[in-house]
Length: 430
Image (cartoon, rainbow, N blue to C red; front, side, top):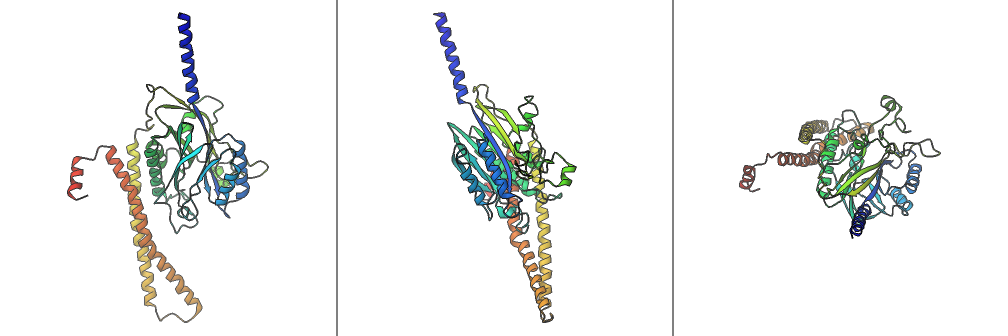
């Protein structure tokens, strides 16, 4: 009888273990900024074909791509990958499109796209961010009985050492972090992947990782001793990339790690990093060029259910998030001051040109060259007036929206809001 009971107990225990392993699942995520700008990007078609061939032969189950600016490139990838990644979604936005798309092995159940209100300058045509209507896209994927949130995004680049887009990128990071924070709860695992244009330790990076408590696999890899886990290198301006400027490569051979895959798991799951690295560091086979001007990032994540007694809510790895928010608020304040200064400069320049054109009516010689000069000056007058009024107002309101959200977050999380604040709003009829 005792032996029978022991056998039953062992069978039950074995069944429980088998059930746990049956519930466990693996995600193999891949992200790459494809640098797919029509006409501008070098070797675009050849590289898109090479990326397609790699993904077709790989074991990735979730793929996030950025800068797929041509719809035809997306349709080509969609058709090429339909046997291994049958589900996909392209996030249309702006004039050129967001450039973001997601491919999945499993059914895409829900989709959502948030376009950032502060997204570059319309007159910076050579940068093109405003025309792309960039933002963050979300696909909720049904993987068996599990829900997976996969977010794909591409934050604004620096472009110059003075980083004139710092406030834009900080508020984009905050909007992205808030979206992840507000939508992650129904999912078993949430993954943010893309070109974040921010390195570990930067303000935007801290906002994205701290607010929704996202884990950077690189931090876990540094503690790993498993040789199968490869150590990732810089993903941009890396010396091994054929498109990297030689001067940048010589100054910093490792480049900058600005492309990321970050994750958050619900309290009932435990995540294990199986593999993490840069899978496309070599040149395209048979070609002298790389797959893109960025290096790809991949993450193989093993998720196992854990006992409710052992489950713990993920917390921020950095307890000084209040400092991060305060710094973000300061960046917004500085940006608003800069916007006010630029408004005065634009309106003054436009006003002076208008007065000059008005005051010189009838004094211009009747020659074609002078007519051309008048047209050019009139164009500048119109441009300065438009930038100092309409565009300045749009930018200021977008900045205020993010600034007020940051202030509200800071107040509510630090217990600054009091009953008197509510009573004051009620008395004002708000």
